[in-house]
Image (cartoon, rainbow, N blue to C red; front, top):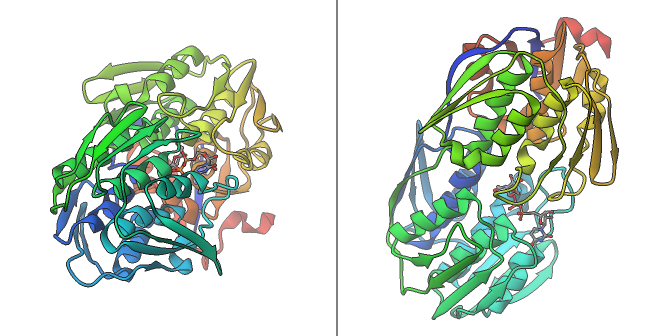
Length: 427
Ligand code: UD1
């Protein structure tokens, strides 16, 4: 796998434009299967997860073309019902084809997911909800088989506002007979984006963005053209890049209302944040103090920014307690961060960050996508050279990561695995 070589200590400065949201684009691509007609998505990020979803859709029989940030999906041919293990294990979000396939083909066969190394990530909420809509489910030989002649709307109350379950159920319900009401639904901006896309395909949906989503089933959907919303997690990552390097970055193309709690936590630490209609600027001088953070479903503090923000809290004076409420096992990167000089202790879903550290470059390994981004941030703040290995995880979700950072002045180089780096002798 490729790696990054970073020489830290450069305050990043300049402007960066935010790409389309990974966590929206993937679902919109899956939703395109609901109609036999062509759909076109704009502002799709060129990231590995999008390429994997394109492969999943092709495997299912759709034609997919990617031209810069424009993705055209033509599912008019005969569709297959099976999402194979090789693809689902590469990306857990592949299970989001289950709802659309069930709605369109009346059956789906999806391999049990593997996915990120951040906890078990069950799919019981997806399956219980589909059952409530009348699907028959059986699991065997590593596959989930779902089938229904026609789904029938019902009231579904999720035990937890799962993003993926809300999305799968929305997509399954759009052509179900009658009304579906999803209670305790996820409220993420990406759910609103999916509802907008489905509505422009002809679906009848209200309440997206609140905890009650109402869907009145329609007979069939058309293709649609849609522009993916900006990636709030990518935006948060660049804001933190400004903070941890004592730089000043203008992040363009993101509405600050997507990041309200995140911004208030940055301000509590001592980072300067200015909000504009369609952007934020973020700067810092290193005079930071710790604060406590608990991740929660939207509009709470995003779990996807937990690892990156621990890097900032490590530089701040005093202690901070970070509580991870969304995923089990999402502190695996802490051992790597501690190798760079952080002092973070974890116990269950709590991490105590002893601040005031100075990062010193060494070799570290990305354990998942957001952990990888956090380690790059630490490398940018560190003295000397940091080598971040297994950056394939980062390629899954950050478009042009090293190019955007280089444009902000970062000394970061991508090295393919065959090329030996000077610091490789440290192993
Ligand atoms: C999505 C995002 C991910 C983000 C997460 C929470 C995508 C591709 N990924 O993941 O980046 O971190 O939302 O904001 O959009 N759970 C169950 N049973 C289920 C479903 C979920 O127990 O049926 C649990 C999971 O194990 C996890 C928690 O619920 O602990 C949250 O999962 P969920 O909201 O579904 O996240 P994802 O959709 O997988």
